[in-house]
Length: 375
Image (cartoon, rainbow, N blue to C red; front, side):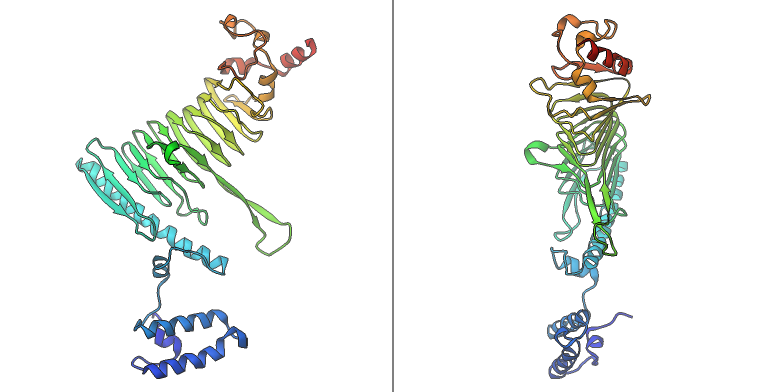
């Protein structure tokens, strides 16, 4: 049975305003923290008194508390987590309803527009167009959505950091996933969200993961664990086109076109086009068989860490340093049929030179050591 505000103050329904006030004063003296009482109980009593003054019989539920406030914080970290858990649950329910709605529209080949969420939870507008494209306007913050067609989006995508249960997962069984003008609008994907496209391309802006230290729950000084929310974007039969990928991100596609990769990012593809000048030491490039990598940076390769790893599908690993120091002229002719098009002292990294899977597979430490000895 739900406890009413009358029950909290220990009085019966229909009590006069004077008696309600007297009951509150009596309990306040008993539970106020200044008198050594239970502060949480005092807050509960004060809220019940304030509610009864405006004729409210029952206290707010947890969901009502969230809907009445845009600030989800409190003195207690556990309370913040509990409230945000409820928020994630409500958003996930909304996205489940959205998924069922767009599925029904697809089956009947209908067009419609509908808002999901709320001003408190965050509104998101979905529209199925006559072409079968699903338009999403607003920030996608929690829950799953599977759609049998292309999606165009105006908004950013994140995932709840307080729980993995309501993690953001967007799955396209066919068609492209695209942000509209992502660089101009600064749209991003972050915090452990998953975007999976079965048969299509992904065109987005910046992609971020999240990795942070969690202090020991027992309060032991210097003891902590690493909490990771890896953001994952996949287009195994298409392209991923993005700007910067930073801090615990994984990309997997047939072709990947990016600017920079930083802080524990993993790039896996058959064809990789790298237009930026920054690749940090803790990043891995996984090249699939018969593939190639092209570094377009031609004015400085200092930002491309020599400790970054290129890993071939057969398991062989090569430090980027070995490519930054190895010159094109030192490769056998069978690897490069058009050597005359390159400066004899050009290295394998930069100047738009394409490094193939076969070239990488045939570069050995023995060859590199011989090159250094000859110099």
